[in-house]
Length: 119
Image (cartoon, rainbow, N blue to C red):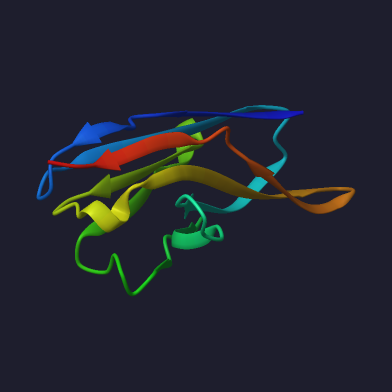
């Protein structure tokens, strides 16, 4: 069983910055990719950024140039540096880890961390 622990959410003013962290622990065979998603009230969950173990990244158009995803593979941790935050970035942010095991591929979600951008 894999556990994902997120941290770093909070309240910030427009233009401010936050850094989210998500650490994976437990029974891990191999992590193939890690990602951040977010879900705003009344909206569907959407992809924010993804990163593979080879450090290939993808970003939603709405966050390109403002957010940076990175990993510490030795610590099985993924980060999301969020700069120039806007009110529309307000959402619950979830980390997602794509795993491989002898039984096949599977994914796990973090518990979510609230990010609120407000003046």
